[in-house]
Length: 119
Length: 107
Image (tube, rainbow over all chains, first blue to last red; front, top):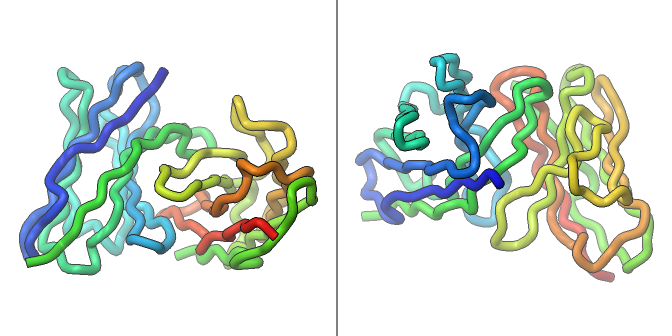
C-alpha cells in the first residue's frame, strides 16, 4: 500500500525558507509515476505547486516557480520542497502526492502538514 | 491560466438524494478533468479521473461526465459519508488548477 508522509517545521519566519520532506513507502519513487506538492491555505481551496519525475522532468506553477526548489533522494525514497522568501500568504497545509501521468490525476496524497508563516 | 468554476458553491441534500455538481473550464480541456472528495481535516481523495473513469475502490454511485468545457459529478444516492467538499481539477495545461470547491451539507 502506497503511503506518503510529510515532515518539517510547522512554523517559519517571514522571509525565511520553508523546507518539507515527503517520505514514500510501499512504492519506489524511481520505479515510475510522477510526484508533487499541492497546498491549501486554511479554509480555502487547493493550489498546485509542482510535479516532477525522478529523471528530472519537472512541471512548475509559474506563480511560485522562482521560489520553489525540489529535490529527490531515491536512496531514502524521499523528495523535498523548499519555498524561499515566505510571507503570511504561504501559510497553508502542504500535501505531497503521487501523480498518474497518463491523465495527470493525483491518486495518492500525504495526510498534509500545516506550515504557519509568522514571526 | 485555465480557470475552473464550480457550481453551486454549496448545497444541502438528504441521504438518498441524487446530487450533481458542475465544473466549467475557461477553455477547452478535452477530458483532462479529475474530481476529488475532501472530508474535514483530511487529504483529498481521488474519485473520478479523465472526466468519467471511476478510481479503483470508489463506490459506483459516483459518476462523472463531460468534455471540452463542461463537466458534471453525480452522486446517484447520497450516503452519510458523502457529506464533504468536492473539487474539480484540470490537468490539460500548466499550471494545473482546481475549482473553488462545492460543499455538500446535510439538509
